[in-house]
Length: 89
Image (cartoon, rainbow, N blue to C red; front, side, top):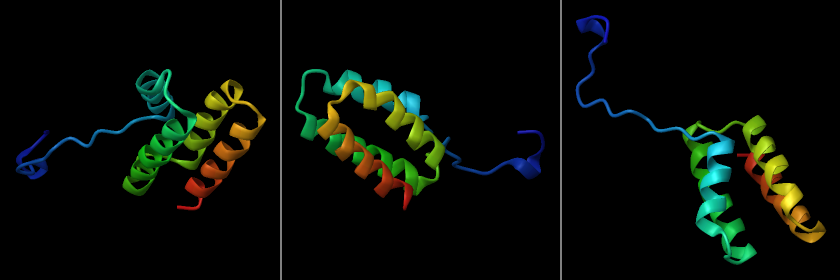
């Protein structure tokens, strides 16, 4: 706060997460879990961040590029569909 004009009572900091942070979080939480659980969580977390304005289409693409090499062809196609859906939000 630089001056009293800048003061806003009950301000709570907005926590934002980058695509890289989301990737690490999801990997650690879902290590050894099913692909369906992992994809469901990816969609849920990314949709929340996208709607909150804290996740851009570029970050979503970086997220996809980070995860895609770990998936087989079928899983990669499903993730691409999820990514494309998120980009439309």
